[in-house]
Amino acid sequence: MNLILLGPPGAGKGTQAETLSAKHGLVQLSTGAMLRAAVKAGTEVGLKAKSIMEKGGLVSDDIVVRIIKDRIAEPDCQGGFILDGFPRTLPQAAALEKMLKSSKKKLDFVIELKVDDKALIERISGRFSCAKCGAGYHDTFKQTKVAGVCDSCGNKEFIRRADDNVETVQNRLLAYYKETSPLIGYYFAKGLLDSVDGMGAIDQVGGSIEKVLAKLD
Ligand code: AP5
Ligand code: MG
Image (cartoon, rainbow, N blue to C red; front, side, top):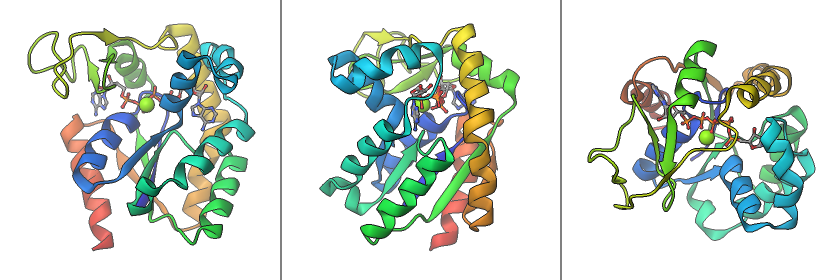
């Protein structure tokens, strides 16, 4: 099963992808996480992406398409994947279609997470993640079971994202409405879109996604 999670910054794409990948044995492909790793490693891609990400803009289609194309071709993706944060523009969607077609793969679902703008800001401003394994948390909505200890790997160090500040979030939202939201109509027209209410608690949203995925059985 191959699917896309579509939604604005802070909608819960990464959170839901984490659960879905564990439950269904799918590979989570987060372009945001891949780009952050490139920035940290100081690679050529990282150097190009750094200032754009800090401002909340979109990294060029060429760069992200290349990253995804290489990653999707790897053996672990043959059993299915979840695209989290890709595609983000119409040209990226067209490139994805082309690469899937040439490798005889297809998209099964595009799931849009619908969340109010005010809630997005609240979610982003309380977000933190494990510095070692990347598991995501929230100060209020998804706390660690034991304070200061990662549920997944037991690590005690956590990080907050450099782009999770008010000014950058405004730009990220703007980029979403301008460049990414047209994908909702694009995938609806292709008969692939399912919209899910993303305003409930994390488990509730997960349940709504599972109902959509059950259509495949
Ligand atoms: P990326 O990392 O993809 O960031 P984003 O799209 O802004 O999305 P987020 O990761 O902020 O939100 P999310 O939906 O994953 O929410 P999460 O689950 O963490 O991209 C970063 C940057 O990289 C971009 O700005 C761009 O520069 C670049 N980039 C990436 N991909 C690109 C591409 N394809 N093309 C060009 N540039 C690209 O949840 C947020 C918080 O809320 C968490 O703390 C979580 O615990 C909590 N939460 C989740 N669900 C709920 C719920 N139901 N109720 C309460 N709290 C919840
Ligand atoms: Mg994310």
